[in-house]
Image (tube, rainbow, N blue to C red):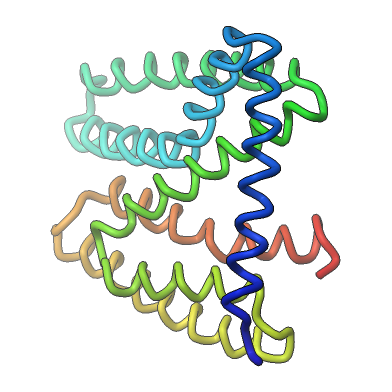
Length: 205
């Protein structure tokens, strides 16, 4: 078969059971430690989304200030938000590094789940059908027979180009701001870039 639904279900169930066991062990050892890990990794999972949205708003504020040719209150607000963002990221990195091997798998599971769901729902609002198709294809690509992966990626690439074109048109015709458009495009480009990094630099599959 090209893809086995039973294998997908079995693999996901195995991953979930392993994560749940490690999470329970950590919670039994120290509930405050588990809660700190949970909260920090939920925020960590939102970081890509928050980073691109914040960068987009900063760009919009910069364009506005440049057109008026003076430093606006929006620019001041964005600078302080960036300072807060840097402090937040630094704290999250320090908290994440505290946890050992067993707990790192729990942390990784939390932030990956939040990252994937937040990115999906944000992009889903822009083009539900295409994002749903891309999501299904990305799931299938993990378990599909290797000889068919190139076909899957051709379809994914076509969907990505279609969405990219829609976002660029929305920017040009003032349907969305430049900052919002670039935030959407950046989140969209995470999909192929992340897969490329995983495939050629992290794993050997």
